[in-house]
Image (tube, helix red, strand yellow):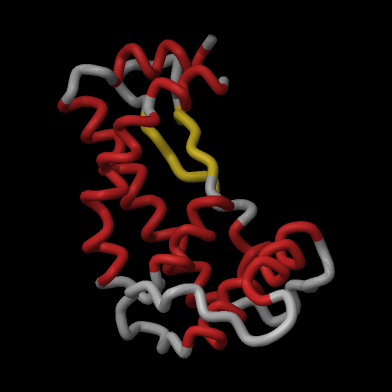
Length: 152
């Protein structure tokens, strides 16, 4: 299935640029959104049916990175809901954001007390991103080719 994702790299880059304003208006900073997107995989639901096939975001791994999102917020002084913006990658002491990400993705940062609001916001935003990606693929006449590549 990696061939289909290779085929949409250019489209994703364009959607990323177009979507940046939406991210700025969200509760996520650019760094947080980047982490959410790293934990999100895209799939094509109902790929065998051209009428109902859709790009969807699989956010099942996002809960694993919630501790890292919280750490990023605390390190950058981000205020939830105050809009994104990139805080320049400030870190607080040993390890910083890289260690926080590793801990969240590979263990050590137990998910107790996951922030349901942040998870819901991430799921909504990734679903919106998937919808825009779908629209872009259709508008550029690439959707059918991508849908077929996904099935192979």
